[in-house]
Structure formats: C-alpha cells, structure tokens
Length: 102
Image (cartoon, rainbow, N blue to C red; front, side, top):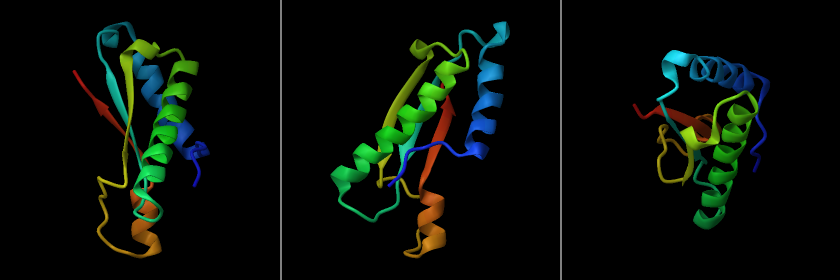
C-alpha cells in the first residue's frame, strides 16, 4: 500500500537520470510502469501502480529528465513476474519497471 521510493530505488533512478541527461541520449524516452501484487481489489491496485510510476517519474524529473520524455503507466496486478501466492512472490511483484523505448 505504498508508493514511496526506497533509498535503493533512488540510487537506481539517479543512475538512469544521469544517463538520460547526457547529450548523447537526449532523444531517448522511457516508459515507467508501476506494478502491485494481487492482494486487494484490481481497481485499487491499478491506482497504486500508477502512484508508484508517478513517484518514479517525479523523481527522474527532479533529477533533470524532461517530463516529456517519460510515460508513466500502471499495470496494477496484471503483470506479475513471480507466480507464487506467498510473501516472497508478493514482494517481487511490487515494483516499478523502467523500459527504454528507443
């Protein structure tokens, strides 16, 4: 039920932001997708996934990446990478995924 960025996540986003503010990468764009585990209503998870994506996007923008180069979206609970119904699987599925578009 959280969308706050961890210290570890900020370190990763800092590396991405540094790369994306390099003049050689100014034409590149990103898609930031927020994901959740399957617990909770699907509609709530879609909103939570969007909040996670929005937090990551806002952090990248605060580090100098133009908002116009980032698309933030939610997959909610619909794109799990761990199939289990236990806490370790739930933890893996609660994530933000960043994809390079070009």
